[in-house]
Length: 313
Ligand code: MF3
Ligand code: CO
Ligand code: CO
Image (cartoon, rainbow, N blue to C red):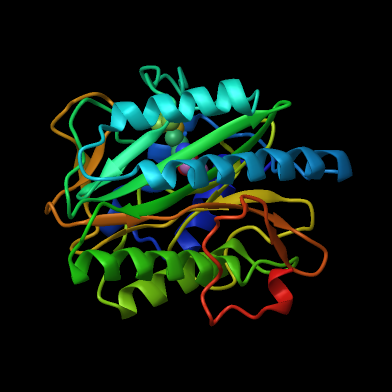
């Protein structure tokens, strides 16, 4: 689309972000541009063949998440989950785990095949040898490359018996993702999606992480556009049929601020106030009449009751 930096900056300013509260550059942009280096790219429109490729990559991604479900129990290490993910994608699906060695924009290469973010970890947690324990909530984020196309999806898993507060955070975050997905159709603005997610989330007393956002996806892992999970209606890009992007809100039980994790591994992000954080992610295609969720499989949790059935086809 060839928008220059100034145009982009003013569009983002319109999205409801004041320099006073965020600093001179929107953290979502600077962080994402640092990590993914997708700035200056234009939004790709997928043709019929591209959509077929994205459907397959999306289904395989969801099937990895299904496959993991029975293993996410107290006592299992995230390294064991990482090995399951790696071997399933490589040996069974004949695909590539996109995170492994992923460099983004000059970041240190990601060392594992999956991201596992536990409790107050917001995103990009690196698997290790520490066992999960009863009461943990863990986000597992899988990205499969198949025939050059990417599918990207994450779910929350409850480890054994969890607190009511933790379960509520996970379910509100799931619903927040769907509040965004259900709006997707040609002609709406990206700002409409961010606004809906933010309104719903804050209405439940939770907060939306600003520094990370959804993203276009296709032959690239992180393409334009950035899909903010907060904002103002009628702002930012207008959707067109054939666009594919993720919606992946990170929602904190407490304050929205984040920081680098104490691991200092260059990836793990945690909540500043140590409150719980949850995230769900789907890859979504804009169709001529609405949307199609691409990261679906037999085990995908069904949409919440408030999502109209017809539009979800
Ligand atoms: N899957 C993440 C996303 O939703 C990105 C992870 S990049 C990694 O965009 F290198 F940390 F794996
Ligand atoms: Co993503
Ligand atoms: Co992801």
